[in-house]
Image (cartoon, rainbow, N blue to C red):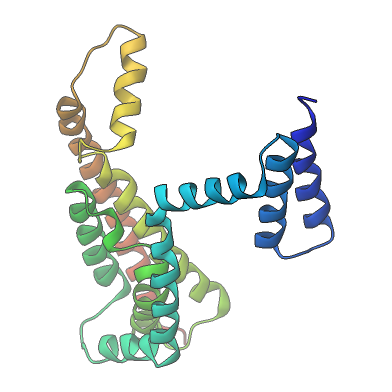
Length: 223
């Protein structure tokens, strides 16, 4: 009897194997699991409602993504490219270096969601970087274009990853503190955050050098 609720896992496996709608499969699986565990349909529905209410911040995604999609449909990427083409001295390295500064500073003060791959990199930063690269290099081949887009994504990752640890009220700092405590090393979150500053600076210098090297590479126009 205690193993019957595990049949809900078989529903998930079968649904994904048949390539059914994932949302429908997970919902049916949850109902099957709840009913086999002795809950009535109203209790299962109530549990769904409570989970949604407890995690309602997740629903913000369903507002942000359509808004970004609509902006892209009406020319957001094209306008971003046009802005960069209007600056005479704009280069990929300089543009991404400015974005790296912004990303690290905002992450360091806890504003992690003000930028990111869906919010800024795909609709804004990557198109602007591509436009700057075309100004430097001329028409880009596929490999070079992919390298520029990858560098735009990497800049966001590095800025966030090494900037967020400077903000002491974050889960990663708590995890580091708890891990060190098991080895009898007692440090406060603020002390850990302070020691994250040299690492963030080193990451900025190293990635900044990579961006400038990319600038030099793109500055060599093909003959």
